[in-house]
Image (cartoon, helix red, strand yellow):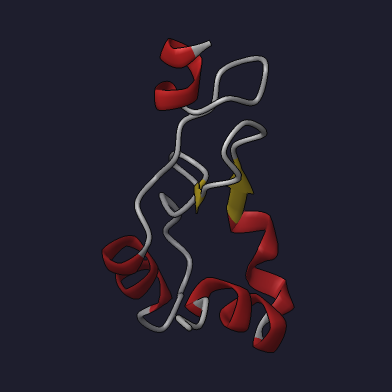
Length: 71
């Protein structure tokens, strides 16, 4: 059984939850586009998160690109 590292990350650091959103069709999580484009000190968080978790673009219905083309 594979452990969900994103769920564990959000449990240990709940302040990161606003950086992510999920597709309402498939439930896939990803970073909100452009959310890490800040110039404040982040102590390496920006680079670590952008390497591990891709940005996920959602349409107005809350569907990712893959789900939007299937429906």
